[in-house]
Image: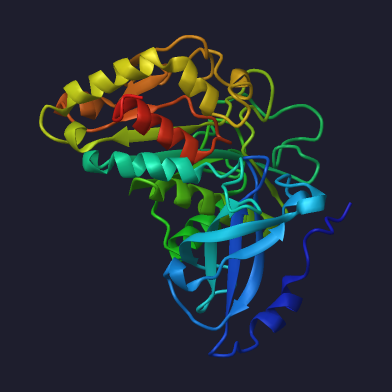
Length: 362
C-alpha cells in the first residue's frame, strides 16, 4: 500500500525556490507538550532577524490540545529561551525553543526547565558539563522497526552495532540528514552510530555547560522528528521498542564538574558516585517521564543494562548503573557516565537531579 504521508518533493521544491522578502523571516516556535515526551511547533512571521531571545515575543497556543490546560481556559504561553538556525526552511529563518506557562504566568507541569535553570545557577561555580547519548529507533508507518520483516524477526543482535552494509544498517540516510541538520542549526552534536538493535541509532550532544544541554537535546529531538517525517518514517524514543532479547534505548548522561576534570579528579568522581548510590531511587523516579515505570522494561540487568532496583558502578562496565570510562580511571580525572536515564527522559530533569545530588547535596 502506498505511503500517503510522503508528498511529492518535486512539487514542494517549486515553492521552496520562491524568494523570501528580505524584511521578513519565519520563526518556528517549538515546545514540550503535556506528555513530557513529545514536542510541538508552529510558525509565525517576524520582521527583525536575531539570535537574541529578547527579540522574539511571547506567543500563545491552545493548551487544551496539548494536554496542558482545560478547554474552558486554554490559552497557554510560549516564552522563547533559545534560538537556532532553521535547517528546513533555511536562509534567515529560525527555530525557537520555548518554555511553557499557564494563564497566570506560572510554569506548566511539563516545564521542567524552570527548576533546572535554578539548580544550574546555584551550581555555576562548579562549572557542570554534560554530554547526552540519545538512542532512538526508526519505525515504519505500521509501527514496526524500519526494514524488519512483517512476519518474524531479523537475525539476532551482533552485526548491527556500528555496522556497515545493506543487511546490517537500515535508515542511515535519516541519521546522516539529521546530523547535518543539527550542525546547520548550531547544535553541539558530536557523533552518531548504529546501535545493537537493527534500525536503532544513537547520536551524542555535548559537551555542553549547564542548561544548554537540555535545550539542545530537545531541539535535536524536534529536528529528528522533522527529518524522519520527510522520509515517511517515525522516530520512537520508547525504552523497549521490541520485547524479548533485544536492546532497549537509553539516554546515557555524561557528567563532570571543574574539580572532576582537574588533577586528582577521580576522587571527586568517586564521591559523587557514592552520593548517587544513596539517592538511587530518587534518580530512578525522575529518569523517565513515568516515574521509573518505563525504565523497568529496559533496566533488567540484561542487554547491557543494570538492574533498576540495585545501584552499581564500575570501570568500563556497561552493565553498571554508573560507568567510569577506562581512560578516566587511568588519567585519574575526567567524567562519569550515568547509564540509567531512559531514552524518553526529560534532559532538564536528569541534569537537574545530577546537579542537586552531586553538587548541591540536596
